[in-house]
Length: 433
Image (cartoon, rainbow, N blue to C red; front, side):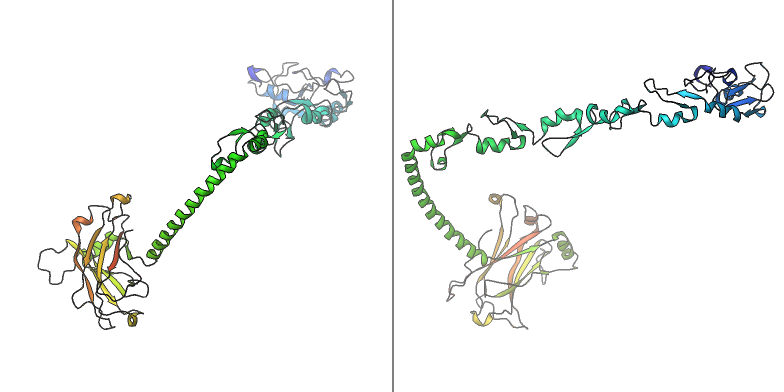
């Protein structure tokens, strides 16, 4: 049933060329029969859809004689259906002159130039006669896609204005109103800065003191009028540059000296995962850690550093166990021992480096260890002497400042040359970072 209880209508609404017989009309919709069926008992005909509406009611009756009907007593009227399909009808589109059999009207509708069809442009909901669809899509439809005349972009026609307002290649006028009006939008900046005759620019001698500004078109007049001034400024600049070159030469010399120092800088020992190192020492799992071997200077003495994070406790009866770190320097057999002076008498400076982000606030902890009167003898594979500081850094001091950062500490090992040494080594002392 249709809305409101009105039966669905199923007949044809086309205009037939000749008047159709009364028995071809549906008794329900009063239209030419569509898919006709016949009631067996009385012979009355109805559209298949119309009779379906009647059968859905509580007491279905024939609309002509009001006799009860049932679905089992209704059959398709094939002969009547064929005759109706043979009938001539006009195209339902008013402007179309086509006339043909009813059975062909649907096929004609798929080709009829006057049939309204939807525009296929995305975004367009308009229906246009089939004969006009191409023209509509290409010219009048605001959703037809067009190519920008200035850049590769494609967009719906209705967005043309918005695109032109942002298109990087759209021609625009110079902002200085110099007369050029076909500059691609993305090149306006370059035109204004480097080409426009009305742009105010600085004198090319501004770097040496000329402060005059003028429009680019007036450049020649400016240079002609201030030749002597520019020459004076150039001479003065040349004198200043000569002084600068001398100062830079002195700076380079100082940097070269500093670089030489860096090439022979003290040994910096980086100890990562310090919390684990300390815990291993406290639990006696690992009492000492040893650095990689290093030389005191180029072609110098070879050493390794030994750090006891929880203190070196052999024969310790002072009650200071676990209160400080101990550090020692062990001399090793090196490649250049045959060229060096023995015993080794230089003092050793151990420094725990403060890692404060502000260099001015750093307070490094230093311990200088002087050699015994006998010094360190030339080592052999069986005998490698050591010197060091038993109470290098107390644990209380270790955690006061930024000595530990990112679970890492840095220890610097430097040497102070003994005053009685008969020659000066390449390395000249202990330099702060």
